Image 1 (tube, rainbow, N blue to C red):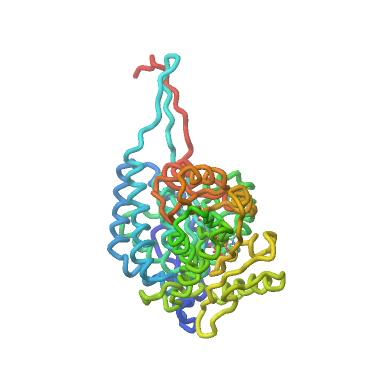
Image 2: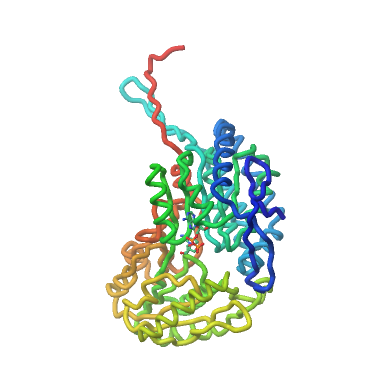
Amino acid sequence: MPTGHLIGGAWVSSPTTFATYSPTDWDWKLADISRGDATTADAAVRASLEGFATWSTYSPVERAAVLRRLADLIDHRNDDIAMVETVDMGFRHESMRERLVARGALNFRTYADIIESHEDETWDVKNTRHAVLRMPAGPAVVITPWNAPFMLATWKLAPALAAGNSVLFKPAEWSPLSAALLAELTVEAGFPPGVFNMVQGIGEEVGASLVADERVRRISFTGSPETARHIGKAAAENLVPFTAELGGKGPLMVFADADLDLAARKAAEQYEDSGQVCLAGTRLLIDASVVDEFREAFQRLTEAHVLGDPRNDATSVAPVVHPDHLASIGGFVDRAKSEGDNVVWGGKRREDSLHYELTLIEPASNNSSIVQNEVFGPVLTIQTFADEDEAVALANSTRYGLTALIFTGSRERAERVGRAVRAGIVWVNTFLVRDLQAPFGGAGISGIGREGGRYALEFHSDLKTLIIADDTTI
Ligand code: NAD
């Protein structure tokens, strides 16, 4: 498969490379990938301006046809994409195949439908016709993290392309391969040259060059709050609108009136894929009156997890993406121990694979760093609350605000607590369900702006108000 950059419809290589290894076996080098630099970024931006000049003149129907062709090609290559993603990044093949790659195709179909059915808002006032037009904004930089890279990329690229923008896509250096497959498919789908550009490389190098380029008109970023701060500065310098979907430290709240089996099952699911999921509810907040019953079921389900090779369907917990990330998870747990937190189970890495043992921690205090910071690994904390007010106060006590999970048997409580918790998305008695029309994003340091449905299209468009006097004649 291609290891270079797709620029202006052609594959180009850089003289220097970086290696990508498989988390399934760290001795397995998968590929040497081109390491883009400032010159690569400049060439890609120039190509994207040419692509934009063509693509922005396509009608929504013409754009939708290309997006649908891409969706069909993704479906056709589902298995290949899923396997590449699994060996490169480590997520379970089954969930890639059944869920994430299929959702990648759905992202393009959904935006094809949205742009085809869109009607400009218009109204008549004072002898004029007002119309609000969605104009393509220009080249858009799309930067993605290493977890679930294919699905995340499609979710961000689809609205940018649907809006009529060209894209400059930079995948993460720890999982670069599925981006190459996606780029190949865009050529087959028939995007004009320069509309879909993909550059490989290191964030601080080619990524930083792309976001600093003043010819870019949108930046859509998913990753860590630390990187978002750098990108935000570059965006501010050039006055470029920017969205950031960042880390999370979601509460998973279990009230005494909840279905405790369901709550324990969903809590145990937070360990899947080694907890490398931004949406995960990693802080278990349990009503003190049911904590023993909950813990018994939760422990049983945790023990039933199978840590193993992600290509094997029996595996429920994938390895961690990279040895450096494994070390970072270990660092969080070691710090927790030194701060006096109690490790209930887990608390160490496995010696024969890139797995960290499923870990549960009872923090000494709500201020413990393990409660207040995203670990992005299979590490959950457990705390109890006496009443609803305390539950909400604990839920809202970190700087994050991406997701919250609530388990309750009361509709009134679902509404009340659902409104009171600070989060971009709140799930009650469910998890990971979101219609693609719904907005997605975070409060606090979990993000800026919203993507999803028409919200992402608006972000990628320059709205124009066109006012025509009624007596205008030709
Ligand atoms: P990261 O911030 O280290 O890297 C993300 C991307 O930014 C990578 O492609 C990287 O190369 C690039 N990058 C790094 N420095 C850059 C710079 N100076 N300029 C331009 N680009 C730069 O994040 P990560 O470790 O890849 O991903 C994990 C983080 O992403 C976690 O915090 C996780 O919660 C978050 N995440 C959020 C969501 C969401 O939707 N909210 C989804 C997935 C992951």
